[in-house]
Image (cartoon, rainbow, N blue to C red; front, side, top):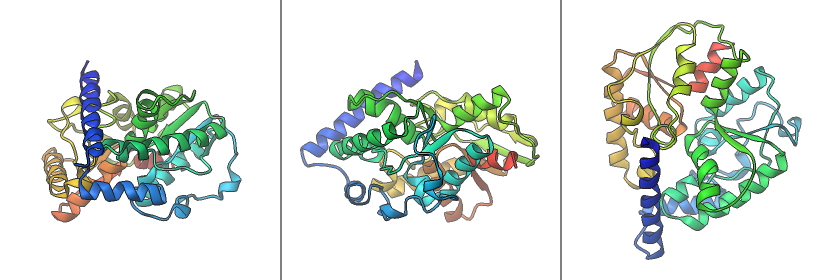
Length: 305
């Protein structure tokens, strides 16, 4: 019930933002700049598109052109938090998963959609579907909840663009492999952590169990919940166009979440979203807090080495 309520609320909000853009009263200047960056370099950071795969530890040519699984990397792991892209790639390799990546991936379009810039989002969607179909993949795995929801819901329901592949977030994909005995945690990493639920993965998609199952099964990991968790989790302030349009609010939200995480006594805050990773890390640095930040895939990769 809860995810459906949030789903309809988000649909209404995004429709209102689209109308504001149509009327010329939106988006905010920072959000408009972000949209222009997506058009020019196919990512919201204005990084050079030709450098999108600089993180890749092997040559692109060494990967198969077609595979059962397509790893949709996302802009933030490709350019900003490359450890997330690398960790996901290395885990897939270690588990002998038959996978490939897109030859020419664009931004999923979620930042544009969430700020009312519909045409930009649709152009991204059309391009990525063409690229996904070239891989022949039956399953698409992404480590970014924004990409996950955009590919799973936005492309099909909002833009009525059809493609057959199943869309799976990496936490769900790796938890299934854990249950099958394919993924095995061997290294004791000895950390007390608290888990932060990303809005896109949690309240909008209803995925709470998979990342927690992974963390709770790691050797030497103790998970302590924050008072506000799951559907009641406090937003980090990084998504929804907030960081680009309202940086002060974004910083405030992140600092509040870091304070709550510290009060649990945990030494690290873990999430499963690259946007959350950036915003929480920035808040820790800004306020000189002593706390580690990890993505779930970082700890998976550490635990299977």
